[in-house]
Length: 187
Image 1 (tube, rainbow, N blue to C red):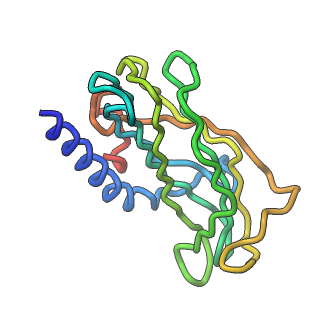
Image 2 (cartoon, helix red, strand yellow):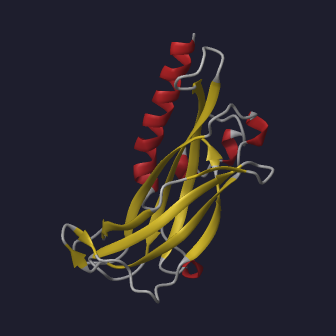
């Protein structure tokens, strides 16, 4: 039974990535500034703790979201760090800081660009599904024109606007919130 649960979670995660690719073409709005986070969702499952006994369980939360960058550049530099809180406001896990990710514009001539954000949070213990978050906080969110440096981009200038945003989440397994609350593009 456990193998079926893990297989189902893997299929949900892989299906979510495929569905998210099309959703990552979500446009930005005028209030979003140079970068916005869209179509955020999570896949949640429990697994055994590495090195723990058979009864030790932890919750794994996989985040997928779209970073939509506005502008007229051919290539952008994007920075962000997702942070996961429980529904009652307790810090569950801080994600990886992604700094100056190279993001090509959707059109080789320049214009808006989109990047898929993938992050896996290993909470370290099993959490009550009622405490699953309804939103994700993205800190250190910044984007600008990529200035080539080696195979990537140079750090963004010091005066680049850096924001923290909180965006709604849907839960891809449909447990909380109900699947009807997922954005149409994120299903």
